[in-house]
Length: 137
Length: 216
Image 1: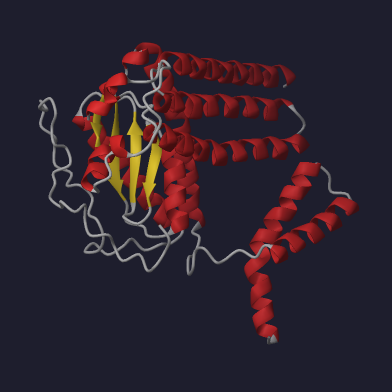
Image 2: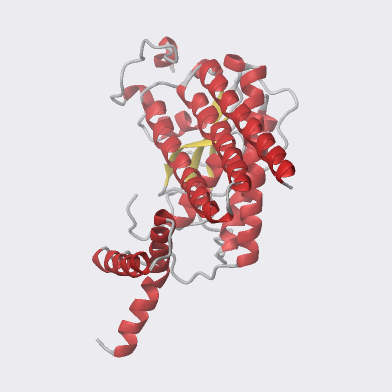
């Protein structure tokens, strides 16, 4: 029984750690802020949840509720953070437009008479995610 | 204040008090008398000092549909982790993405919040803008291969919205009201390089629905 539990925990821990690692890889490899949010908010969350489940399997049952609480707050808060960061990134030209297939938000803003490049955002930044030619659109 | 009215007010705050009490016990990790009584007092005081308005008038939670929603949520979580991990490893910086507009039917602050939250958890989508007045979500999608992917993701988001509305017994808006979803027409197999994906059938972007004086 103990062996089985150890094996389950080990598998869950390793899978969770793998997803966290892949999230970090995505964070490095994706080009712009919003794409990096995908890696940070999804792979990371899944990794954390797997590790929490693994811990819950291994620890006494009384400690499971606290782990559940951690999972719950992660699930509540990660989307909120990424929405705020994503919105800010879009408004400050941190989205790599060359990689965008369509951008219906830009169409909407143009139709509303408030196209993005007229709003006082930051100038296209110099960091890696910045895109110098996005003022053309 | 009559006795019945005050009783109803207590009943109205009961879920919040119970949740705060439960949270208190979980955080302390014990059920000793001090924690129980102190938590109850604190929860009651919190609910009284910061009274919250009724956010979902006249809804009936449906446990079965909520269960289905949670099940989908967990499945989505696994799928989205795998999707984005694969995209990161396989394509990396060359991954194409898109920002799509998803019209919603529900017209309620809480439901729109829940839909936006779960959309961010769902595979390949991150909400980057919420247009509360027009009831639209702007969703960053990744990875995108062609227009078909976008149409599919839009449909997934709207299915999700339907599940959320169903789980609280919320009626979907009548079809004649508010923005209509994009017609689910099949995209052309070979899309032109810069296709007008959202046909400007409504150049004003759809008249903003009567939002009954809510804040934007």
